Length: 307
Image (cartoon, rainbow, N blue to C red; front, side, top):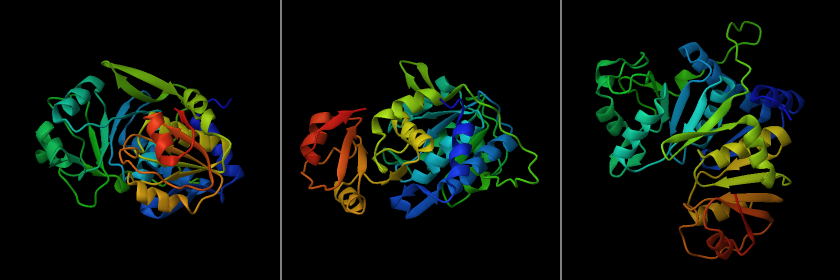
């Protein structure tokens, strides 16, 4: 068993740098293992340069379409020793309470993601009014959330008190790199349950991914920022399968994407299972779900395994 994400990814990327490792269908983007290593390390180095330390916590509030950002930022944060906490809610009070309980050093978010009928950037302005007095790219000082320093968004426009995702990437040269990454063996992700954080180490995620191993492609349809889907990313790093994110929760779109793959496993959640229709899907080797098993079996007409 490999002890850390740096060791696992480094070994795989060196052995198979030109092999396609990740496909983000909704963004029409393919990365080899070598390219994913570069982009995830760039996020890791960006965090280190901003002053993040091993054991810091970062909250993910990303939209379902931000598939490449979710995967690269998760792996990058883990390389930097930072614990990623994925969270999703349409309730502003719940979001505020969660930020207060977790006390993260930063948040990675999609500014145009709707919380009810309000864009998340507007929700954030209300929760952290100090953003209006903070220049873009500067360290934030929040009176309500004392540990909150960085707000990193995936949008195109600049917002006061925030930092663009692409501007937080530091592509450090191998020959002239003064930044170093920690040897992280602690938790790399966590979920909030009953007011307490449930932590997962690299080894925990490798074990979670064992069920989906055995296929050439593992296709994720639904929310990209969950512990289960993070484990599938880790499994790909360990075993070398191609991880595919559809980025869509529309069954018709998913079906069109699946027709281009052979020998694949499919992982779906309740956002995909919300539609009631039967699909004729060929080449589906294994079906997994984090949601309703019976509904998944009825839609895809194949036995489903609960993750």
